[in-house]
Amino acid sequence: MPIKIRWGILGCGKIANKFASDLKLVADGELQAIASRDPVKLHSFAKEHKPRLAFDSYEALVECPEVDAIYVATPHGMHFEHAMLCVKHKKAVLCEKAFSLNLAQARTMVEFARKQHVFLMEAFWTKFLPQYQKVMEIISSGEIGEVRLIQADFGFKAPEPKAQRLYDPLLGGGSLLDIGIYPVFIAQAILGKPTQVHAFITPYESGMDEQCVMTMKFAGGALAVLSSTFAVETPVEAMIAGTEGRIVMRNRFHNAVGTVEVVLGRGEPRIIEVPQETGFGYQFETRHVNECLLKGLTESPVMTHADTLMLMETLERIRKSCNIRYSVDA
Image (cartoon, rainbow, N blue to C red; front, top):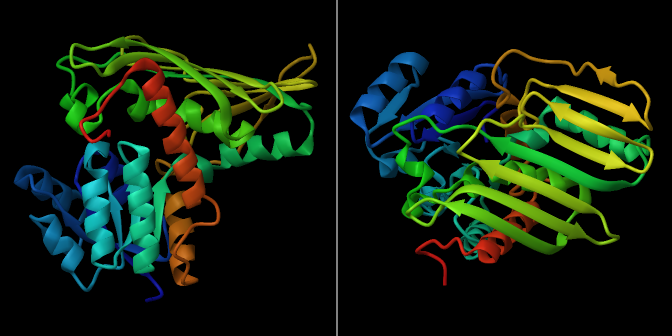
């Protein structure tokens, strides 16, 4: 493996642009190649980010010997196909979330990567951000006591005309996999696997969820109340309440820029300043992947395969609870 990881980006949409911009902030990584089936997007992306190579097919990207790792940035309905293609060609993979459409796909992806001895990680950037790490540090310190309740939301009013990926079952449409995954992630990261899951949705005509409200119970009796919506604007905050106090993650809790508020008992809030960097925040997960690859690892010790499979299992339990189905479901 070279000293600098040579990255390829599969898909040239909005999130791929952010990833490419932040790659410039990663000392041991560089943008080597991009691939898109859309010539307009390919040209625009290449003009802005100036990769060494640009391909009009994904097959050409994965076959390129000058690429070490590939960021899969296509809609999540295509993640299974594209991640498997990369792994087949022995390329390390950072796959955007949702990792796949269902648990069966996720298991197949993980098993294939292990068989191929290829690195594979879900791109859950929140887990690598300073704000998230500060929150986990506070919880571990015992300052707010035992966590008993989590409330988290993620919602925005989807602009018209609505993007096809938001409601098309073939693309994994619906608010749950697109943004609801964040509230589910924060609850599980703190409380583990839920023992009970219930959910209700407001569906589109396509059957996909425009809105989803989830309730979960965990071992020991802790509860979580979570929601996602494309119908209205919500605060996008997470409140983590313990027996001695609470933490509130404000200003889009999943994001790189935000504040951590700690309240003990009924006292005054204490605002914790979290160090910030320039960029969108994707540099943190990229640095971690580079570190893993330079060490010869095939699995992240931070965002493990088990973490991804547990998250996909819970998302599937939620979908079954409110009858959200994709064509790939058994």
